[in-house]
Length: 237
Image (cartoon, rainbow, N blue to C red; front, side, top):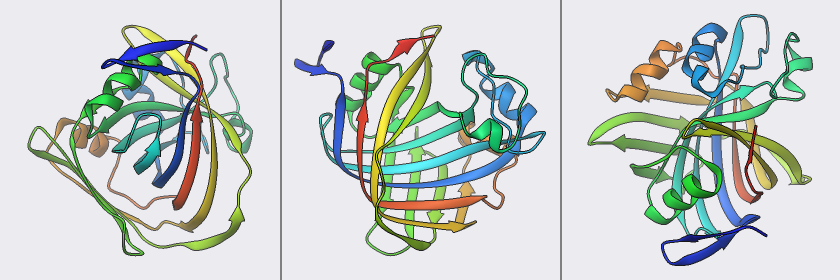
């Protein structure tokens, strides 16, 4: 097991999150615009229909895990695995991974660990989460500027606890694109078509999202009351 020294603590992989709430909204965006945003990674976006990619906005409350408790917001895109080309629709999405374009957090330990272990693009930001009501809300500020205000409406309950699902995340840092195998198991899940309202601020990342076509109606949104996650070691590609 690989181990890294983070702020005087040894952290090895896999890294486990034992309890988290995760809320997300999936938006259709122009594939050419999304390609331009992530061109630095060398990866290509997956297309749900010709010319349309998927941008994911998410926020999470990590309550118990190997990297301590913290809040996180993510801007990500569904991407084809390296070398994948051609197909669109379900054939493209079946093998899609998630490229993490921006990942603000509110604690320095997870910031350093995320950058060091996996190359995640973590930055410190002010993250206000409101999770006690059926409507889940995140207000993200960076450099004293509002980036976004995202509201997820309650959806239809999904019964039971889902299976453990393996997935691939992709990151890019210091000129290297990496694949990060991870797994998630969810319970207390709710989903709905649409179901998200987003207001963009005046931060440069907000401008980037507006150039992708946001705000607009989400494809669907989800809330997971209890998620367990496991992140394995990153592998350069």
